[in-house]
Length: 138
Picture (spheres, rainbow, N blue to C red):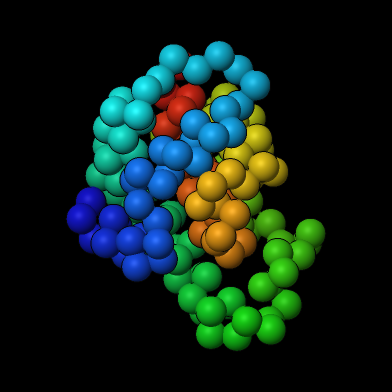
């Protein structure tokens, strides 16, 4: 958990910023959650090995395909690029089940808070994390 959190922190992503983004742009469904319970759910999600591996894959793809070459065809998040969406949806569903896919779409399209500052792979991975954790609190 500490490794994934420190890696995300190097990209300016903290649990507090993820919580802020989650509550800034609530999905159009009633959510029974508060900051503390969402923080706990995010920390539990970081301990899931599959979630952590998917987040790390998003980080590695971001580094290899965008950070190393900001002019690459991937940097603009082209419509044909689906791998980023697949990672985000997989994270959301691992944490929150099938209905988390709807919340993922909401966060992915609106890109609240810190999500708006991230590249195509990290923004979708974090949207999936937020969506799954928000759905799991319903």
